[in-house]
Length: 176
Image: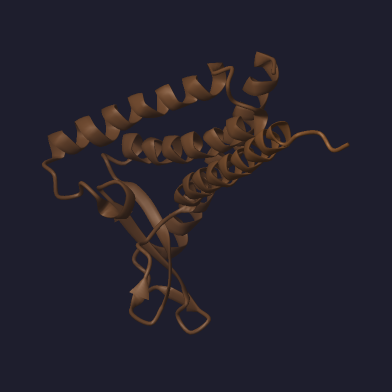
């Protein structure tokens, strides 16, 4: 696969994902900050403004500010740049995998943009659950990351099944 197609796909997925995430965060900030949570379907889906100083599910939120900066701003920024570089330059990846990695990287970059803009915090606003069993508060970038990871698992499983089928075909003797 040529580099131009890989780059075009990565940019298209990333720009779309980051723009949609930043747009929804702005709407959530304007409409939900300082307001009570809005709920639907007997509180199965909830919109509420929240900020997160940590990573996924507030991991690292209790670290000292300097440690959070080094880990979540500089460290994650370097990790995301490496992930983007791998997805753009690895000859092993097909377009599906490049698109999946673009979702993961763009979700991370969009949350990283929040950290840079808002003194180390990320805007979150969605929450789901049944009764007392609830997710953490999350955003569109988090969904992009999880969808990208899920797509990679599905694709990997499909490739593994194809490889096993090809090996089985080669191992069986020809029928007379």
